[in-house]
Amino acid sequence: MEWLVLGLFCGMLLSCIALDLPILWALGAGLLLFLACGVRKGFPLKELLKTALNGVLTVRNILLTFMLIGVLTALWRAAGTIPYIVVQATKLIRPSVFVLMTFLLNAGVSVLTGTAFGTAATMGVICAAMGAALGVSPFWTGGAVLSGVFFGDRCSPVSTSALLVAQLTGTNIFDNIRSMIRSAAVPFALTCAVYLIAGTLGAPSGALPDLSGVFSREFTLTAPALIPAAVILILSLLRVNVKAAMAASILTAVPLCLLRGMDAAALLRTALTGFVPHDPQVAAMVSGGGVTSMLRVAGIVCLSSSYAGIFQKTGLLDPARDAVSRLAGRLGRLPAMGLTSILCGMVACNQTLCIMLTHQLCGGLDRDGASFALDLEDTAVVLSALIPWSIAAAVPLASVGAPLTAIAAGCYLYLLPLWRMAGRR
Image 1 (cartoon, one colour):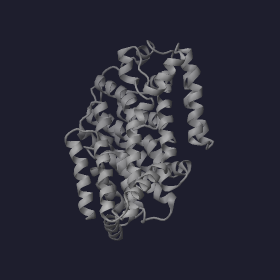
Image 2: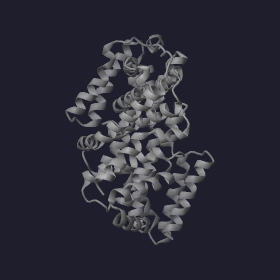
Image 3: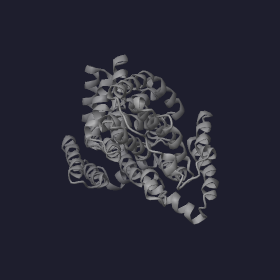
Image 4: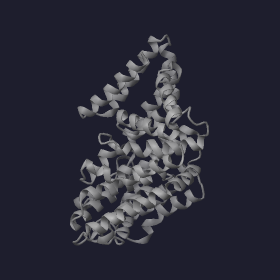
């Protein structure tokens, strides 16, 4: 019966993708399906509901963090922090190293913001516009953007995926980040080499757009705009609690927003619903953020976490977990986790549920929390972005107008797990 129930759940997820329906519908239906399965196995519905609620409560801290991230990214936009960083960063771009710089700039912004989608919608869009002006193939531009946005999504102290992995494995996010930096050193260097060669052989030509002129219509581009970003970086290096670091960054962004002429009502509205500049051209590049921008991912996490307790109590995932264990015995732990995360990503169609399912299925392969956290980061977090119908890949590429074939140019996403698998089985 377990395989039948899991098959029905997979069918619901794939149907939502095929019909372009919200993935939350399938997750909600999945919760009802798993509850019904538990009742059929003889467990009281009240007990199952309590178990589901306890699963949600285990991630309450990360849900609060999601809300803080929404406020943070909105106020960074409104304060001019992101526009200033973008303008200064684009001054480093030269045509011959455009593809490489696209990767590095998106990696840098994603580390600062912790969001792959937000980075793709800001720096990614800007790089795509520059690439079009230079005549660079969107295949390479899209691949470099995809690699860059998931570099920071994996190892930023304000990344929702990094925070989720730390929460699930009971580990310290700063310890995890140090491990992630070490494991990514060689794949990062190889990725840079590939993009440098691709950019040089492509021999782009043309003129870069003047972004400082565009952003100056809406912002005063001065160095104090960097204060909110500097605060969170410094506090992160000092290993201050992530929520406290984000709160401090938000507080330093508030006076910058007020100096731009925002009143208290506009500031609150921006924090809740996101920042939208008056200028349409600027709005196309830096709109976003806000608590509401995090509601969908928070809903996915809530529903997904409610499954955890039900799965454990009813043993619904036991056959699949046994199959993963046998696979690990044949191939090794990391290859087994990699294949499992790909299958989970193909079914889940989003990174968050892929991480949680991989955690559920592979939890017995490694008793060391720190090692398991790194393995999750180097498999489920990045491999979900290699699945064409997953929103992890489709949304960033759609944001920059790149074809889905650009996934093949997302070198970092597969060089990282391949490097880990080659060095440790």
